[in-house]
Image 1 (cartoon, rainbow, N blue to C red):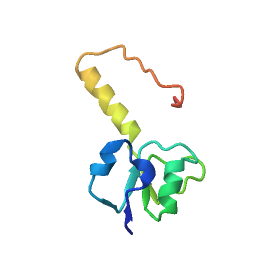
Image 2 (cartoon, helix red, strand yellow):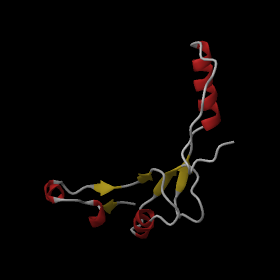
Image 3 (cartoon, one colour):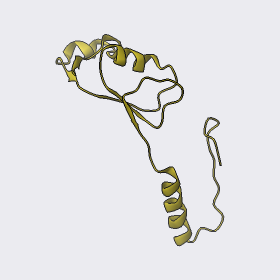
Image 4 (tube, rainbow, N blue to C red):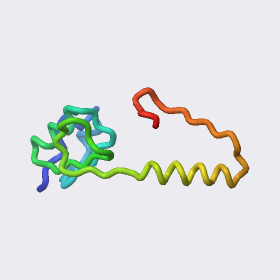
Length: 98
């Protein structure tokens, strides 16, 4: 499926100078539940891929995720190999900590 660049994705006068572009797939980074951008892309018939498993009923075509556990273990191994012995973790308020 293809679609044209949606009018709501254009901003300012620069959009008047852009050539017509066909979109065949969209990747949405960290969409919120009921994200209006995702809903509009789906309404236009565009496949939507989300990074991370979407929350609730976000209508994405597919999602991809990172192996966070392996990434953190790799970071900790690297820090330990570099001599770090007291490693702290700070997370955002929306990030669940185990």
